[in-house]
Image (cartoon, rainbow, N blue to C red; front, top):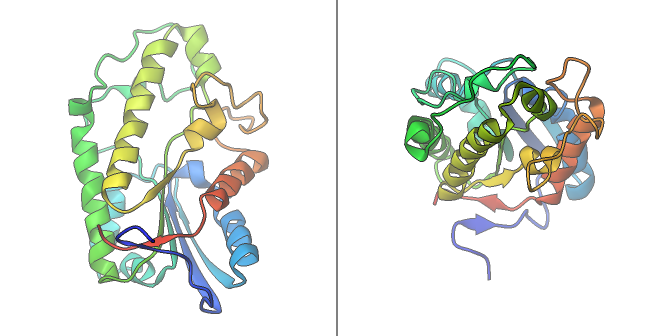
Length: 240
C-alpha cells in the first residue's frame, strides 16, 4: 500500500508536465536535464521553468512565492515537479559556515557556530516555504524534491587547515535541509553525497564535476545531479 500523503506518478499522465526548478547558481544547467529524464521516463512533454538564480536565498524564495502579483505563485500552483534549494543568507541563522564557502587556501580560523540551534532560523524558514507550497497547491499532489549543497572546495579547506570544522558545519546545514524536507513531504536528492561520497571526504573536482572556477558544476556535474534526481523516482506527495 502507498504511504499516507503520497501517490505514484499516474499510469496515464497528462500529456504535458511543468517542471519548476528553484535554486541558486548550484543549479545552473540542471533543469533541462531533469526535463529530459522526466520526458523519457514518463512519456510526457515537459515545460521547463528554470528559476536558477545566482545567490538565491530561501528568504527571497518565500517572498517571491507570497507575491501574488508575480509569476512564482502560479508556477508553484501549476507544476507537476518542483526542485527546491535556497541558501541560508538572510535567514537569521547564526552559523558561520560563510568562512568555508570560498576557494581561498589562506589559513584562517575555522567555524565554531554550527549547532542545530544555530541553524534553527533556517529550518523555520524552510518550513515556511513548504507551508507556502502546500497552501498554493490546495491539496494537489506534486513531485517535490529538495536538493542539498555539495562541497566543491574540500581540497582548499584542507590546505587552509579548516576541513574538519567546515565539513561538520556543512553537514549540519544539509541535515537541516533533510529534516525540513522529511517533515514537509519532500524527498532529498543529495548532491553532497553524490559529489563528496557518503563519508563526505571525496573531492568532486577529481570526478570532473566542478568547473574551472572551482565552485560551480561542469556539464558532467549537472548531469550527475539530474541522474540522481531521476533515480529518486517520480512519486508525488501531498501536504503531510
